[in-house]
Image 1 (cartoon, rainbow, N blue to C red):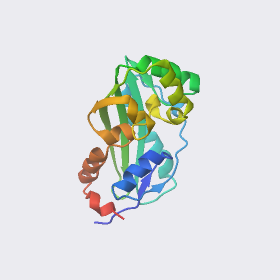
Image 2: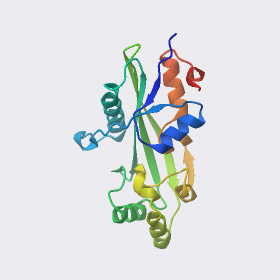
Image 3: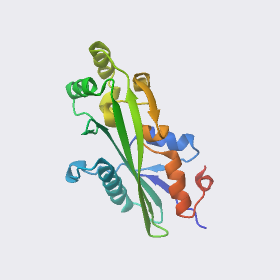
Image 4: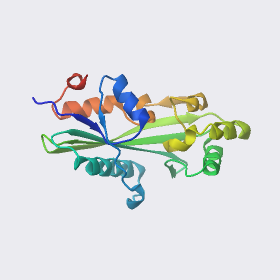
Length: 197
């Protein structure tokens, strides 16, 4: 079976590191897709559609490749959050999130151009946040880390200090479920080791 080049349709350094640490060294191509164009209330459906749109945008730049698009959102108390637009928004959001459970949704869209197939899935992980005081919240936001993350925290960074525990896939919270990716690759007839560099 021919093994196509693996393309990550994302500028996320966290997603790239997850793949590299798992032995996959992807070609990286940021999609620049305008996420505001998609209006879907259900978070699982929304992240799947956004992931698909990102992969579609990148697909035109590659031929005979395997293209992975991803998108993540956090839901807390029925509010859906992507990346915060400002430090003030990040502070307000953390004040709402502290001491609560969030649901982290990550859409995965895998386009196999060799086989002309799409696989689109959603990984779901439950995240339990620490009950932070306002001073700690402001210090965390001042670090800049939450401003670049869906859900306003980075589990693999300082934000990991403020997550009491998770239920579900750890890497899904970082932006890409490695077990789900393995299952998707197998469904397309590949073995994950085919993509080890």
